[in-house]
Image 1 (cartoon, rainbow, N blue to C red):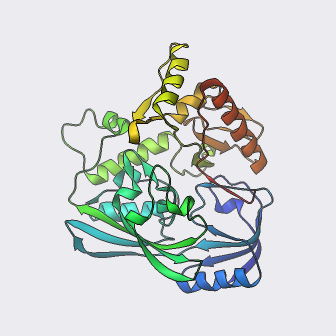
Image 2 (image 1 turned 90 degrees about the vertical axis):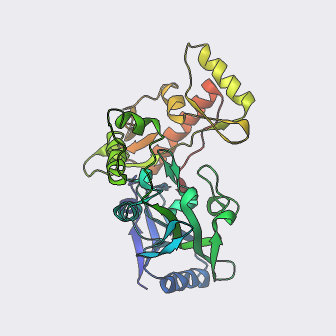
Amino acid sequence: MLLQEDIPLAPRTTLQVGGAARYFVEAASEADIREAVTLAKSRNLPLFVLGGGSNLVVSDNGWPGLVLKIAIPGIEEHAEDQGRKIFEAGAGEEWDNFVAHAVAQDCAGIECMSGIPGSVGGTPVQNVGAYGQEASVSIVSVQALDLTDMQTRTIPVKDCGFSYRTSIFNSTQKGRYIILRVTYALTPGGAPSIRYADLQKYFASWATLPTLAETREAVRTIRASKAMLITPGDEDCRSAGSFFKNPVLTPTEFEEVTQRAAARNLTIPSYPAADSQRKVSAAWLVEHSGFTKGYAVGHVGISRKHALALVNRGGAAAEEVLQLKNTIQQQVQEQWGPHLEPEPVMVGF
């Protein structure tokens, strides 16, 4: 294990803001992770676990303790179970590499999550999802180091507490586990999922059902058109992805926002959610609160291609990102009612 000091964190994130880590370790094995955790405990250092760096905002002050970068690699394939093929991936494996591998093996279940930046270990934390698919549907179990007693545990999907962009790993048990590996079950020879409106539009003129590979390429193309695919040189990609979650509203809350929209001769996009609730478009709320695509203030702004992406236009400070976040939240709540919850993890604030 190599312990480094005063390591800049901004280059290790897709938003590219924030200060340095006092100490930094890149761990490619469970043994490295255990050694780093033991070190942090012995020196009473606060510990932050870093994955792919795609879904976080680091404070300008950086991190005062130890940043542990999870770099466990590898993809293992196992025998089929109940008609599904089992894949076990290291938490440090790049997520899109894993999707590409699964698609190359003609296994369906995660093809619509192509192009999402970050690592495999981050997918259960946020219950990552896109274009009609969510990680929780295909996850079998999560192997993690339990920091309460330093035991390695295999947590079955039923105990992960998955819901929209939520799991035990970022809510009730936040900070307890370090994810080591994730096991997925995918469908060999399965048809691609093209339920999402953007995909249906993309394939509308096709006479035949697209293959998994064609669906993956379509998703990456659509993501690129929205600056949601990391493209070198494109400042609209210098973001933390979608910055706000789509609000899930009770029937009463949904009725209120619908009436506010009707008063402006507008209709807010919405989708069914659990327990008779409705999920409404955060992007619509942002745009109709005065923050259109391309909006800029100082060194930060909103992507020219996607209203939910707050971007670093170059040389931005984390504090500027937070100020824009707060302004958007305030305006949306005042004009429409719902409070927008940030999706990225806030580190060091």
